[in-house]
Image 1 (tube, rainbow, N blue to C red):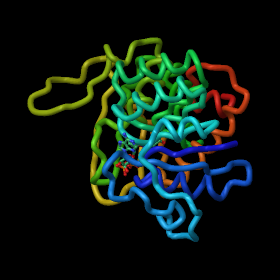
Image 2: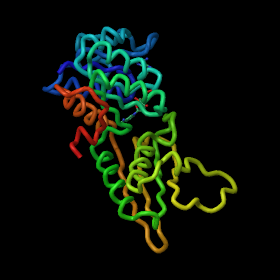
Image 3: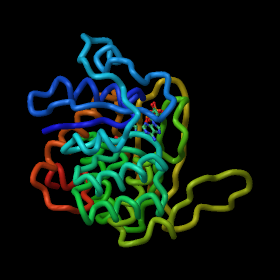
Image 4: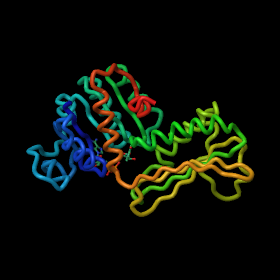
Length: 265
Ligand code: NAD
């Protein structure tokens, strides 16, 4: 499978370059960065501290999509919207790990998914995908007797909050309870908040250091507490999941898929 990477000089982009270039099932056809990026022209191999690969960082997205069976995108919501249109135009599958996506951004993925397979997951790790499935199951079993709180911590450079994964866990909890997260979420608390809204799903965000990604879903009742925790200690888990998703799109019908689909959950 011919795989291209957009945002290839980013933290995740470099991880993806490593995973894709090392995979016997994939051929790395190229990587691009935003126009004007200082990385432009740098050999992709040197970018990841390895041997030269003879492919420089490009800035022509259309060219990359035309050359790729599947493109992996961990960039920004605005860039991902542009890439979704290119995927549809050039018939390449798209794997989207970008977080902070609002309804308009997701609508762009839905449009592309009418033409090509699109896998979109705020967290591509196998462990978090399982945590989401467990959260939905436990929330469904416990109903409203237990207050649900979702705690996340990430490195100091993360720009969106709560994390896409935390919101995904919130959605899973809401689905388990048969409610709508947008109606039940308490995303921030500050000052004189009054008592907890019954049935709400609360979020708490921590930022600092080099934390790759910690998520805990807490089910708290009077007298006991259940906590489900996932800790990512290396970004490679997300890149491995994204590569698995990319390979999974081979001969797949157009549609918007999640990591649950990729893992067959
Ligand atoms: P980063 O800032 O290090 O990398 C993003 C890269 O995208 C940068 O190099 C930037 O120049 C590039 N970029 C921006 N606009 C572009 C464009 N138009 N064309 C090409 N390249 C462009 O950020 P990061 O830590 O690598 O994270 C990227 C995104 O992935 C964030 O939204 C983050 O939350 C998300 N993320 C998702 C997962 C997951 O499993 N789904 C895991 C980790 C991070």
